[in-house]
Length: 195
Length: 166
Image 1 (cartoon, chains in turn purple, brown):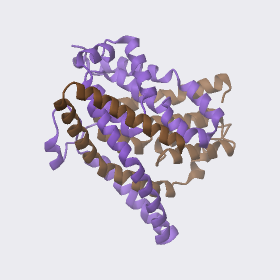
Image 2 (cartoon, chains in turn red, cyan; image 1 turned 90 degrees about the vertical axis):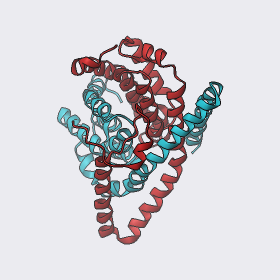
Image 3 (cartoon, chains in turn green, brown; image 1 turned 120 degrees about the vertical axis):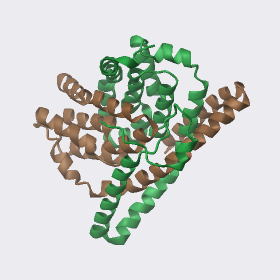
Image 4 (tube, helix red, strand yellow; image 1 turned 90 degrees about the horizontal axis):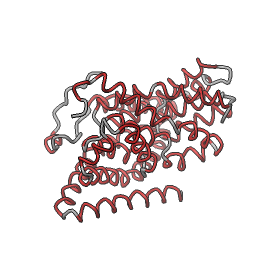
């Protein structure tokens, strides 16, 4: 996968080296095109009231999410600032072994909030010295074992039985994904290996 | 609703806790992180606005019965494979993903297939990758993470078939 060249963006000038704050033009364009095409289809099918119904619903959702996005960004920024880099690279770095993967997975499982917290915090961990393996364990654990989405959405919609078994079966996956990630990483990018 | 409130309390409590630790390191450390976090926020809001406000339209036009039709109980490993692809291709937020899963279960879908669908959706729904993960994380990490995750919905389906649950 090629990383596209960043397009001109004035906000980019604010960014500090080492922190991911980049314009990702193409992913925005993809979503934007999908949204325009879908909205047109909805308009042709349900008329203008169908379009407005969805718009008001999604605007409410957006308003509810905004403060949490702010909380997630602040959480990520504080964590990047206060975590001691040496300690992080020792306990979550390339040589942290199974323990590092377990710490990453545990951290992902207890992290509060949704994607608005998980990704800024994961990005902060990478910045302060965690390796891909431990960060993968954290992200996968957040998405599969994290209680936020399970409690708010999965339990009511899918039912308790399915949700609990889904989580039990998912338990080993974050550490396995992290281990696989580490295994592949050192073979794909040998130069980046532990310094 | 109370679960959402509890999560908000834990979330802002965590922000306050790490903010306090930063403050103890010195007010400069705290204001620098506040500035950094706020800039991240300002930078990310347009992307989230587009995704969240637009995702309702994408979800409204996706033919749910096509997805649920793929997940029949006798579909075996081919069903698991289509479930994984369907999970990755499902747009919208958690309501959409889980609702399709619930409909598939009610319509007689096999549990290993529905499980693979839900897990694949959690691991690499394209909209979440594009909307949330790419803006916050290095692109190289995101693609690497998604590629490494590919075997795991299949592993979960295999476990579910072996133990006969859920």
